[in-house]
View 1 (cartoon, rainbow, N blue to C red):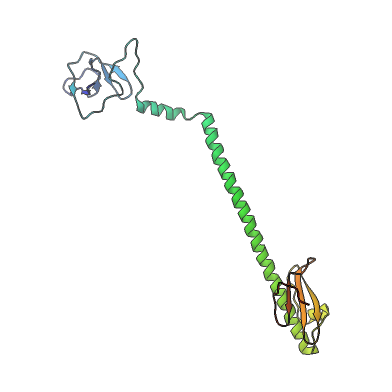
View 2 (cartoon, rainbow, N blue to C red):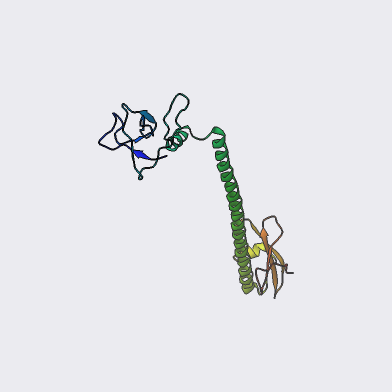
Length: 201
């Protein structure tokens, strides 16, 4: 099928500069075929123009196809079906919920790790305070103490929620334990070493 163009000098009424059908009775307005007002001389081929979606004119047994650009525009107006929208929205929500769950789990674990570090730092500080209090007491009494009240009066400062236990004490040595209040000790110290993770005696 040949592409044709109506020259500017001889247009039928209402069809100037538009593509015509092969028989010259119809012209393409960009959306649909329109009848020409009068017969037109043989159309002049224009190789630089793209053909319309179909060059055959409508008649009693045939209706023109909707051009692709129009069909696309109409499909954009009507939009996707509700089922497709529900699937897309459901997928997006599912992915978002999974992401939030993963972030929450990661966040909770991060908080737990930070809390463990804070607890560990508080225990270490309490243990150091108990060791310094033992050394202070020894300067005055020439011996370490087994009495927690004397250790407190010598400068022991307990961290929040911590508990110090004097495992043993003599003139030359001591063993201290520290842990969360009401829980078994988790750190120990002697006159020679601190932050031990194994019990001393």
